[in-house]
Amino acid sequence: MRHPILSLLRGRRDAVRPAQARRGVSKVDALLWPLRRGRPSMLLLHRYVGLVLAPLLVVIGLTGSISVFRVELDRMINPDFFVTAHESAALPLGRIVETIRSRHPGQTLIAVDYRPAPHGTIHAYLSPATDKAGRTLPDEFFLDPSDAKELGSRVAEGCCLARRVLIPFIYRVHYSLAAGPTGLWIVGITALVWSLDCLNGILLTLPPVTPPWRRGFWPGWKKAWLIARPRSASRLFFDIHRAFGLWLWILLLGMAVSGVALSLGPQIFQPVVRTFFPMAAPVPPVPSPNGAHRLSLDEAESRAYGFVVAHGVTARPAALLLGTAPESAMFYLFSDDDSFPAGFGSPMITVDRETGAIIQSEFPPHGRLGDMILQFQDPFHSGRLAGLAGRILVCFSGVVTSLLSITGILIWQRKRRARLEAARKVMSRQAPDPDRAPPNHTPCAQPNKPGRV
Image (tube, rainbow, N blue to C red; front, side):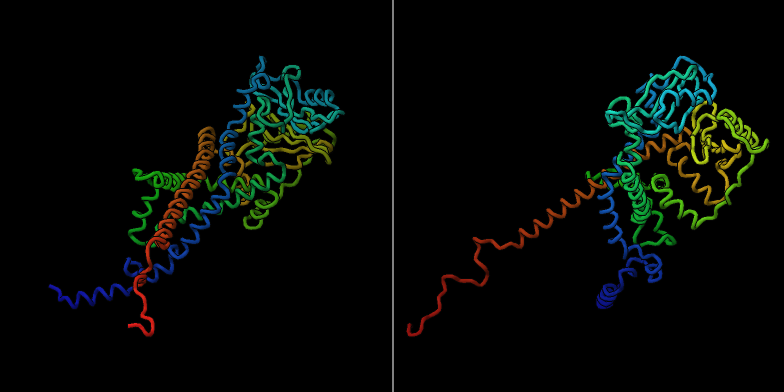
């Protein structure tokens, strides 16, 4: 049996040992794993960054979930714009373009999706314009593929909840808050801050004292991945916030980074990638085998198709983007069913119509690491990288983003209420009672006056 004096001395020795030693953490571990020292600041940053971003992330997340299937939803809401009785297109590209231009001479044709799926329609996008009365003219047209008859039209950036423009409006809210270039910057900066907060958030889920190279780290971190039986609503919100954030962390971080790439690509993302990652040298123009000469649109289409066939692509071009100075035709969708293929997407071939040369060609994935990073962003963000399963997962991630934002607000609100209630109780205990006499005060005792006995 240990002597009482020895037990007392041992207790005093334990009391003066550092906290790390008492917890079984060495000074080296504390130095190499400084999460405990920085955790209060990290938690404060995560809390208030989340509160600022939460309203934006709820809007962007929910509208993004809808936008994943915007083509299907738009077709469902406006079937007369998207469905015809004809099975396939019969008109050549040149005739389609000339027909559109002749009907709308005051507007410039920008793009046309001219090879629809069976029973689909041709979509043409023109430059915005107004009539003499100042009213906005339609700039998105839907045509019958058999005779180029107009089936309907709408203002592509119309507002707001009318059936014809509902889905395009929701998509515009998603990528720019329907606020033009200013909205693009807001969404891009939001995505950038969100990316950094994702890194901060996962660090907050790690055990703050035990480093990863110690035995207790993984059992301690396992709890963060689970939703325990709730003892209270606050605990349930916390577990949902932490567990959903962990299980989908890679996906959410990828959505945030790709959001920066799509919103502020030329301004921020592309310069950073080109600075830190190797890029392939630009592909030189490929001259026409028949010598430099002007091409019609149908000839440019044949030129682009022959070029992709030589690179192993069999699908015909289905969408066209027209350019000027020099006059060019970019064929950006090669598909037999008018849909973007799964994976990294479709080739993009630009033909100089003045010389017949291929002045730009992309066959994703291609190039070096920096090129692959840039080509990865749009297929990942849209979910097309993994086909239908990827689109469903991206749709779900938008809902989870909103859920994390809402549960974060609820956690903060309940903790703030608890802190205020605790402070109120402390203040009430410290406040003096006016009906109670202060200590050492005896109102009945009076000092003796001089001269009195």
